[in-house]
Length: 439
Image 1 (cartoon, helix red, strand yellow):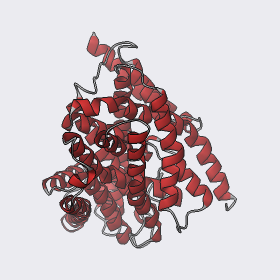
Image 2: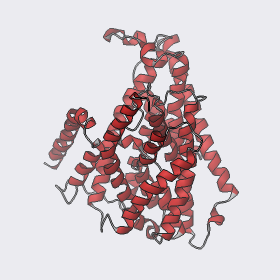
Image 3: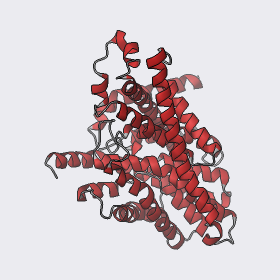
Image 4: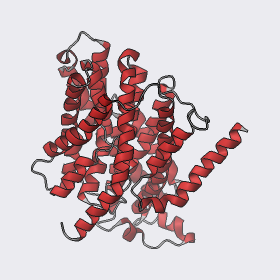
């Protein structure tokens, strides 16, 4: 009977969201908000079907979150269809690197002086909260491969980059927690800087090469030998797992490698399409002409990239559903209050001071308009990336240092899902009207 109820609940959720997806796009809310509420309702305070403990189940939750992030990062990279030499890349790079370098120290200072945390826990909390996650508000991210809006492109690119770039800060925080007597200079050494630089650029190189080799290799097999036809889902999953696995073996940052693999596959397609959009390059495809299209030298790259993108977007939505259900359920099993004055102060500081300041500093002299800067300052959405680093810290760190950070991290994620989810539709509607008027 228990299994039957699970089938009914899961089937009902999938059916409801499939039917209500179009309606939700017009409402001031996001799907993530509904998933979060459903996950909470499945917990002990609701119908009691699911009881996840973020401390006891940290390892399993980290693995699940890791998989969800890998799918999302690859999908984001595959959406960004702009040559790497294009100036549009400058802003996501600034947001991904410079804004991170501003956000982490400011949050660390807030943790030390306002929350009265030690330096290690404060830095660890800053690293947990630093990554952004535009996947949880679909209006804010790049909609498809033809979308080159500067604001959406920048937020999507930032989310693809900073999930990986947050890792060295998390490791620094864990190192300081493990050595309470150490100061920042004891762990922030030239060796650590070298390892970090290798982790970043080595991962990007690994993902880029694997994306290039895989895309060209499959295209060659299809056009020259009529092999490797169909099953784009297997290529996508294989490339994601290979990129992450090889990057990890090489001691680089696997999240960046997966993002770079998606960008690389799209770059190969963009060059092969010679300036045409994927839709123009593919043309009309009849039901009985799919194999011919997939092996056509003029269409193979666009067909493969778009097929992989379609699969990963669907997988990304399922991952979003699973992760929000998990986070909602963890909230239901959390001991103690979720929102306190200290937590409210942290949320206000992050949303209203730290994020806007980090964006303004990183975009000094950029081509972003004032409305675009305001929206990028507001939509620093926290979500799956923050939950991943929380579970990583729980698994790798000392309980005395990490457990007190749980309410802070979960409260920020919850507030972000609700506040940013409610504001995304009206603000993006305003932005589209402004763009149409040429503002």
